[in-house]
Amino acid sequence: MTVPQANGGVVVNGSAQVVKGPAPLDASKTVVTLAENLKAVPPAEELIFGQTMTDHMVSVTYHPVTGWSNPEIKPYANISLDPACSIFQYSTSVFEGMKAYVGPDGKPRLFRPEMNMQRMKRSVARIALPAFDVDELLKLIKKLVAVESRWIPNVKGHSLYVRPTIIGTRPSFGVRASDHAILYVICSPTGPYFRTGPKPVSLYAVGEQVRSWPGGTGEFKLSLNYAPTFWPQQLAAEKGYDQCLWLLGEDQHITEAGAMNFFVVVKRDDGDLDVFTPPLDGTILPGLTRASVLRLTVAHGETTTLPNLAHSLKLHTSERRITMVDLFSWNDAGKLAEIFLVGTAAVVAGVGRVGFEGRELDAGAMGPVAKALYERLTDIQEGKVEFEGWCVHVDDA
Ligand SMILES: *Cc1c(COP(=O)(O)O)cnc(C)c1O
Image 1 (cartoon, helix red, strand yellow):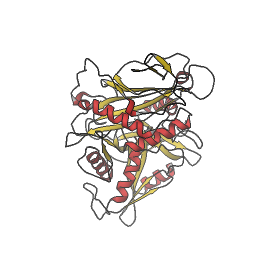
Image 2 (cartoon, rainbow, N blue to C red):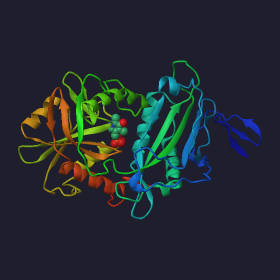
Image 3 (cartoon, helix red, strand yellow):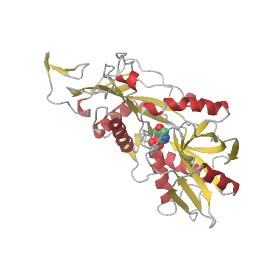
Image 4 (cartoon, rainbow, N blue to C red):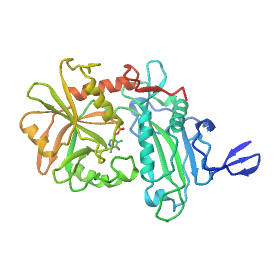
């Protein structure tokens, strides 16, 4: 009999055997323990983002000698840790945000999950947490989603939010990399970001506190990037705005807004539209919604037509620096068509007011390009439209 131990090793037939070299993450060794009492699934319309957790979680530990333990899918439970652990002292923590949807065939699927896995691998490397095999983690996530499939609301705009997390658990004050870790995955059913239909987001441009900087960690999904944004976010809220618009540098160029990627649509003299987003220069989180939006705007008029946009409407997509001077001059010239934000949680959100140094512009409500992208993306995610193999089924784990 093989019994997984808390230290990540295994006890085989009662005698401790030390595996030679740290063991790699191996989803085929998963031990599944189902919860005896399942929670009641709340009605889809009552779901609040990130508040309800499902019945089970994935949990795996890393020990520097034995490596990754046998993965467990087990009832959702607290984690007990030494208070000296690296995560509490030095914020050694990485996470991902992804969604599972149920398609018209009743089967659960994930949206471009390999991109989340690759990004998580880069985040883990950036703060020197133990490496893991991305294919094995994806198999584990698929197994968990299959176990939790009754939690995926089968209602448009609803999904199961999946949060893979790795925390450093080295129990020491030594200021260095954590060579112990826990990898876990938890899930939360979620509804549309804006229950009462698309309500424009208002932004307050902030240059004094910055979210990211050249050589910093803004392009990785590290927990340590988020805490410093909460106070500026409160200041923006006190001024009556929903989110911060994060600026950087003397030219006050835009990086992101809140925890979403930024897009602007500008009218051209020839009647076409420009679609701009800041380039991935190391200060921008490489969102997979951002990448998908760029792909869809480029494909519009070529291989596909976005909903309710004319096939002949040309969208000129480019990644370029966007300053506050650009934004206000497009606005003053009557060329500012739309501003919108993209990310897994809200998918696409239209921007209305933007406040900056005592001035304000109003980009209106969610415009036709943002609406078309929202419709197309959610149709692809919910399996109603197939596009370039972006959705993968979970039952092949
Ligand atoms: C997660 C995140 C995004 C959006 O990325 P997606 O992969 O599209 O969900 C954008 N900006 C920040 C800062 C983020 O943390």
